[in-house]
Image (cartoon, rainbow, N blue to C red; front, top):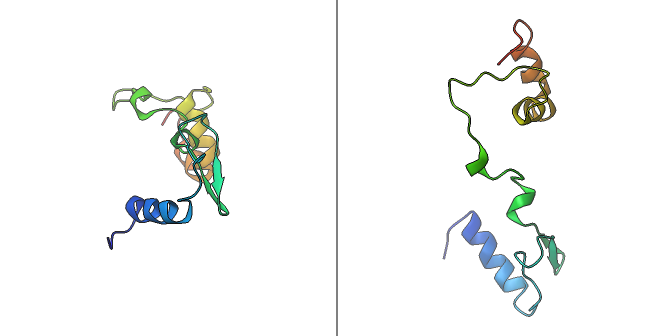
Length: 91
């Protein structure tokens, strides 16, 4: 009982939504709402499964290439992206 993180959240949701039989985020991949709590399926947090990442220390990502890594870095970390690509075309 006294844990934090996913177990605590699961406990709260089970308590708050115990009478909601249609609450099933695996059903159609859409967010589900119960008692003003919206539960999002995991693909909302990681749209590309981690098993699809095939990066290694030997792979060079070219800035402006449009690759998933280039786009993600540019959109989610614009300042770091700018600094990383100031003097080089890759990072």
